[in-house]
Image (cartoon, rainbow, N blue to C red; front, side):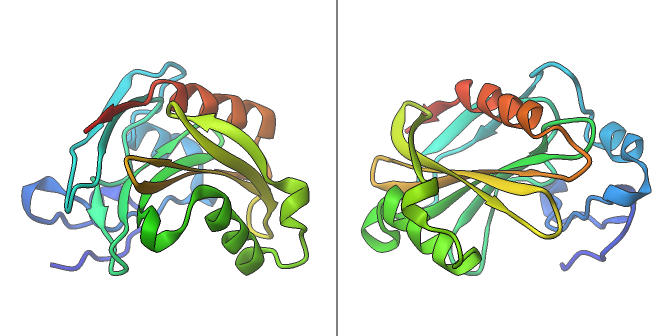
Length: 194
């Protein structure tokens, strides 16, 4: 059953099992409404457990400052969107996606280069891609300035042959350094469920 777009979370219709497949976060309507709707906290008190599967995708457990905007779900291009959570009171978010097998999607570095050439062809990938350990795995990190928000800070990493991405969208009215620090804190709680 498709969901009806709404400015209010409570107006979105639910799928079977209480799962929400469509959520819009209204940045311009006053953050307190959606901070309350997703139970935003200054502490990492919300546990998110993404079970393994389908097709052998690893699962994960992590702690975040809010509930996820949606339950884990598969996209039409066979990616698994694991979660999107609030990082800060001003609306910056962190999303986690399992893109697919490394053999099909590429390693973290080649995937990062591909993303940069598609999103920001004017940027030199070699100048902005940095190595970083994410969830105990070797990966890469890069920052892309965006028009709508201040920037996207994305990490790509692989585990057990699967490519993952964790991207923080930081809005103009937010403190980028605080949002980035909170994203690191969330990712530091990551535990694999194989």
